[in-house]
Structure formats: structure tokens, C-alpha cells
Image 1 (cartoon, rainbow, N blue to C red):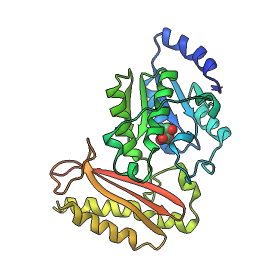
Image 2 (cartoon, rainbow, N blue to C red):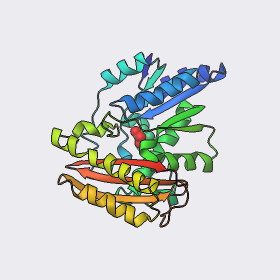
Image 3 (cartoon, helix red, strand yellow):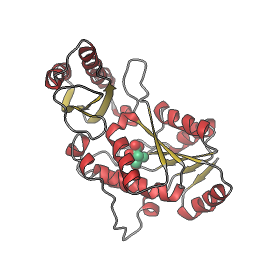
Length: 282
Ligand code: PAF
């Protein structure tokens, strides 16, 4: 497995892979890999000839006062995991390599980034779409893999790829959870033992919403109220948002008739956690 730091080196390897006709599977990450990332790598390994993982903590998707500096980093451990999963190449560039002096371009998806996490994190998705565009141009993947845990990111990136006629298929893989239901995330490493226990309210509230819908509830604001009670009942939790939206355009839904996305963001101490589920409404 190669660990590549620079764009010229990456191109030297990717060029021959492409011309030999091998398919490239790509898993973009910010590192500190966990089983959620590895599920994407496994999918890439089973579907593509050559698997690339990028590890880059992208500064332009973090806002002022967010956790860019503290974001956990452990390239040695990430490399071991990738090696075990049969990854062919890790691309782990420096900030300067990705954003040389004078870098002045941004990629922006407009409507889909206005709500949910886009409201509380202005500029976040612009940073994501910009870096992923650069990574797609560099790696030239046939298939790129993302997690459903970042549901809005997945939709935004699909829209970007479609609108800009990018030659890549995006596959969105299911959220991987700890045995008690907490969605896996590199940011879980920030949680104190008490916060880790308290963080279960996210999944608990989503499961409760799912139960209510199964039992016939169709009024979104009633379901959101029940979820809010669960979240605000946990003293360590500060609710940012709970929303029930259309799974394709993220527009608010009042009365549920078809599949919906239920998404929430909660701060547990200093740590911002997100989670979501898609519920089929019969
Ligand atoms: O989901 C992430 O880890 C990041 O947002 C991504 C897609 C790697 C872009 O930096």
C-alpha cells in the first residue's frame, strides 16, 4: 500500500491505473478511521479493482471556533487499518498541497445547503463540495463511497456530481452503530464517559419517532415534540435542531405520506453530534 503526500506522485500512480482499465473505488475521509469508514472501504474493495482512501482534515469546511485544531488525527493507525482492508493507496496531502497560496475557487450547492446543518454551520458544505471536487479530479474514481450518517452531505454531493456532470457514481452506505445504537463518528472520541452515556438520547429519540410513525402518527410537529422531550430530558444535551424532511430535496414535511428523513444535531458538552434515520411511511 502506498501512502502518497503530493499531487504529482498521486497522478503518477493514478494515470497508469486508469489507462489499464482498472476501476477505481474512492473513500474520502478526514482520518481517525472507525468501522463506519471501514464499511465504505470494504464496499469499495468488493466492487472496484483499485481502492484509494484520502485522509485530509479539510480546514475550509470548519467554521471559526469549530474543532479543526482538535480534530483527532492518527495516520499510523489509519494506515494499519487500510492495509488490513486491502487498500491500494492512501492520499494524505498537506494543507499547502491542497490549497496553495492564492487558491481562490469554491464549489457551492445552493438550495440543499440552506437548512439542517447548513443553518448552524455556514460555509461548511461549500468547504466539503470544494474539497471533494478537487479530490474527484485528482483520484478520478469510478465509484465514491460516503456514509448515510452525514445524510445532508450525501445529498449535497450527489447533487453536485449530477449538476456538474461529474464522471463518478456516488454510493451511500448505511450508518454503522455501536452495539448500544450510537452512530460511529470520529468525534465520539471527544466524549467523556458521562457524555458518551448521555449521547444515546440521539438514537433513542430517533427510534421513538420511528415507533410513533409505525403506530400511525403522521403529524411531524407532534413527533418532533416527543423527540425534543427526550433530548431536553438529558441535562448534558443541548439541542441544535430536529427536522423531518423530504429525503430528496430536504424540504420540511408537516404531514407524512411517503418516506421521510428524520435528522437531528445535538451538542453534548463541547461535542456536536448528528444522527438521522429514514422512515418509510406506509
Ligand atoms: O465526511 C467527511 O469526512 C468529510 O466531510 C469529507 C467528505 C471527507 C470531506 O472532507
